[in-house]
Image (cartoon, rainbow, N blue to C red; front, side, top):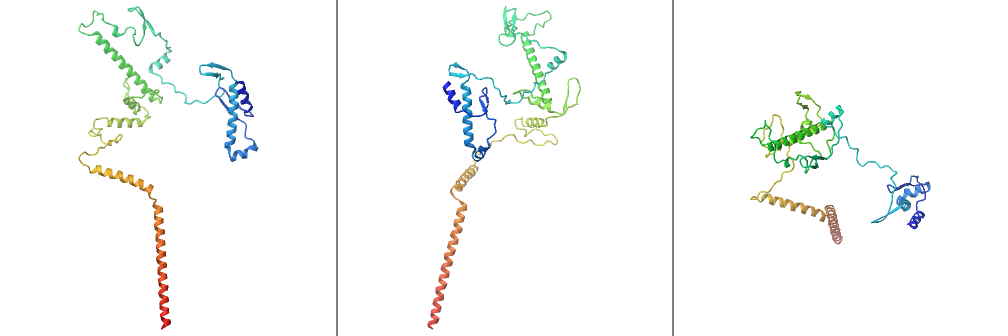
Length: 335
């Protein structure tokens, strides 16, 4: 390694270099010499090739001088931390929109306390998970429920527990969609890979919004009219007939067909199939004929052949006229 580093330094770049071993990069900040400027402008390739080769040799010479470590793949050089700050590949992520509970907790000064994942189960006498598989107080592990004095003897406590759980899940889902709708109205991104349902996206784009407190017709600025039109187009073609037999409102325009509809040739009538085959063959022959026959060259040859034929005809006609004139003059002389 020392001999290789010495050989690289001998053939290295002679000048000032800005070397960043952390990023394995090197550059020459000095301007081009006036004597080399004319040759560089004529053909920059040799100058750039030689300069890049010497700078790379200088960089490898610095790498060989670094401390090394042994590994399973061989000897590796320990690179120092990078000194050049590179720009970000992607923009900074936007802050996530706050939910109603987060806003309420911030106003009231409530701090979130992290709870432990494990909980002591008195019935089982062991530590169990708070949520997930084999959690504590799992409904599937309850085999009987103690009846109270005021309970209905005909009611099923297991069915009631299942129904209550479904209601809780539906309530949490409604709150989640409401938070997404509020974030979409505020112009914030709802998250990576999160797509608003059509009903929520449509309601967040409408110009009016109602509330549970009874304030109806509250004016809201519409920020996405395209979403309303898209939802309307989707609803128009959501029936089995793609909206063909649906009742139209007064002044409603017919929606545009979505996508391409496949067309099949009739089984009994073969005329359309023959026309299609003839059109395909004509198209292929026309494409091949353009490659085989040069139309411009053929027209030029035809015009040239016509000119040559006209010259030959004119030459023969002039020669015939001269010979007849000679015969007439000879007859006059004899007479």
